[in-house]
Image (cartoon, rainbow, N blue to C red; front, side, top):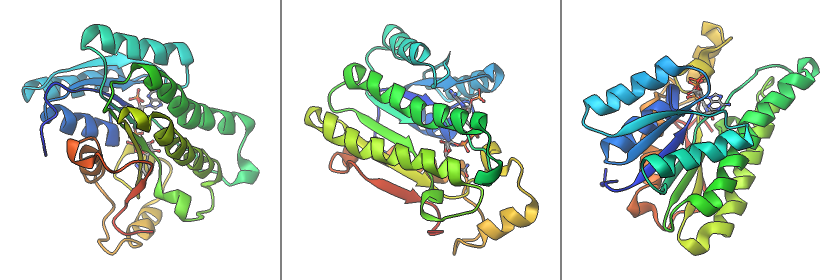
Length: 246
Ligand SMILES: NC(=O)c1ccc[n+]([C@@H]2O[C@H](COP(=O)([O-])OP(=O)(O)OC[C@H]3O[C@@H](n4cnc5c(N)ncnc54)[C@H](OP(=O)(O)O)[C@@H]3O)[C@@H](O)[C@H]2O)c1
């Protein structure tokens, strides 16, 4: 991929899974990278160490994306440690798989708080704190195209993320900032496997002509393109990175 030398990147939810792989690729391309996470200090520090061992620059910054003040501090810490950010990737997310009939108010509120308010909080900060010519990628999900039972609340949050993406691309486009969504299909991470029996995983995998489920790097490569100089003409889009599942 092309160089991201002199670029500064915030990747939310990058202590593990897809976000971690995105952070590793952006740092390998030269970006000074913020590893944001909610709880798992050890996992975040491990990704920082992996990046540093490979010759890159990264620091871990804890912040719950659903918390307005903590997200402001995430951006301010980025500016004080590395400088004004050029790239924001929103990978922090959560999923509770339950039919709507069994979904509690707490399930609904927490999923919206992390997935929607979390994205909103970072976009609002980016509106004033991201450099001109910057890049924003929000992680949505191919489930918004699939009508899978038990994904109602999760899909609703990702539908909201897609709409925030489209509208925000018009609001900051005049500064040369692109805003896109990437929608993974089933991808081999903790979030995907939690609570799923083997036959469910196999059924979802078989919906892709490539069969096995995706790896985090399959998604990270698409994000890496969207944050590159070459993707300057792509904005307001939602790219399926899903092995053709939908
Ligand atoms: N995996 C899939 O099949 C799939 C498919 C479609 C879309 N997606 C989307 O892709 C994104 C990444 O998913 P993943 O599978 O990589 O998930 P994951 O492996 O469960 O990792 C989630 C990451 O988000 C962080 N996080 C969770 N809540 C947070 C919060 N409130 N504030 C800050 N960080 C928080 C976690 O931090 P801690 O380490 O502290 O827990 C962790 O780093 C999500 O938006 C997800 O909805 C995933």
